[in-house]
Image (cartoon, rainbow, N blue to C red; front, top):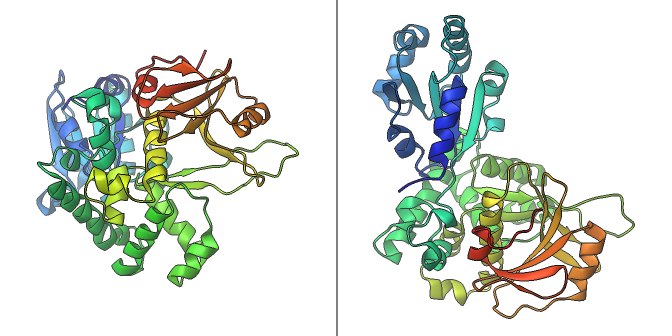
Amino acid sequence: MKRKLESELRDRLRTSPVVVLLGSRQVGKTTLARGLSLDKPTHYLDLERPSDLAKMADPELYLSGRSDCLVILDEIQRVPDLFPVLRSLVDERRRKGEKAGHFLLLGSASPELLQQSSESLAGRISYLELTPLQANELPMGEESLETHWERGGYPDSFLASDESESLRWRDDFMTSHVERFLPQLGIEATPLLLRRLCTMLAHQQGATLNLSRLGSSLGISGKTVRHYLDLLEGLYLMRILPPWSRNVAKRLVKSPKLYWRDSGLLHALIGLQTLEDVLGHPVCGASWEGYCIEQIALAAPRKTIFSHYRTHAGAEVDLVMEYPNGDVVAVEIKRTLSPKLTPGLIESMTTLGADRGLIVIPKGEAYPLSETVNACGLWDFLEGRLEVAR
């Protein structure tokens, strides 16, 4: 499947000596990297394969003999000691006039979990994130939206032959994380506790974070829960949406909101196999909210700031978007085709200084609810048919 990031990845390889393609496991990083057609040969190493890892016993000797290739190193987080060697090789090739396209690193951990790269390769490295399939990458466009929401965007889940195969893949995916990948990051908790935490977080989709309550339910400290959440966020599994805050007189809720980034994983953790199961479950509204927030965030311009707004009096906005040009848009997400304009939204927009308000609904053309607030189907908004950033 054609990925939107491919052209940008090519551009980065033409201008940067080291490009890191990050993202959750199984989103297609290896497929994208190995499918690149470039003006130079590529050499691929999987650092989770013992035979490839053995070649890195003397990485300087091995890699220096492949200066004519783009070397692709998969699962780079497994060998963080490579970063100083890569810095040395990059600097040596730069002195010879070879400016870009030396190494493509693939990893399943965020730059914050790969601190060695930012420290050792500062000024020589460029980061890109490959996400699960986005809504505007779907082969059948708007017709695929509900399947995408139900199964999520991981290619093997989305393209499964039926619902049971898709759910089984997602169950196995979560099992591999709680039994293998999270312990690799130093978590000493049992797989059973980690699975319980993930399931509890699924039932808390879209709720404000309460560390002490989560910790007491699991028999661990709130500080430990915070550490686990940071790791789940660093593995691109969760989105922690911060609260909007300014120096205002209103009493605002100052806790972030939690979302599983992939709705398919959320549904698997709760045990929902079909779209009918999702529609009949209490998590339906929060699941749709999280799905829309993720798709909107992925389609928004770079450096857009996202937050949520909520007062103790009950006024709230699901998503506040602060665009790089200074525009502020207040977004409400509703699982209905006949949304109502509420006084709370108007009041919140005044406090936020929002230029526009938007109520996102499952489908339908945009239409005005007031001079400053429109209703719009998710697909039309993602396709840019409603201009919100001037």
